[in-house]
Length: 69
Image (tube, rainbow, N blue to C red):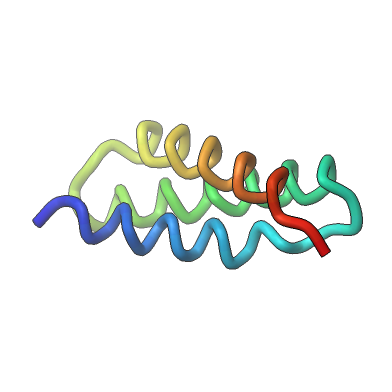
């Protein structure tokens, strides 16, 4: 049951990671948006927001870096 918020986090992070014109800017924006989404989802589901931010930021940064136009 605990995995569904993280699946939502992954979907949001990858969806928002496409913002930016270069892989570097997409990595930064994806990381920042992923960190915010991860902290929010973790806080809502009763987890630790810092852990959610770390996971979301990492997933968002990787997702932003590997997406292309």
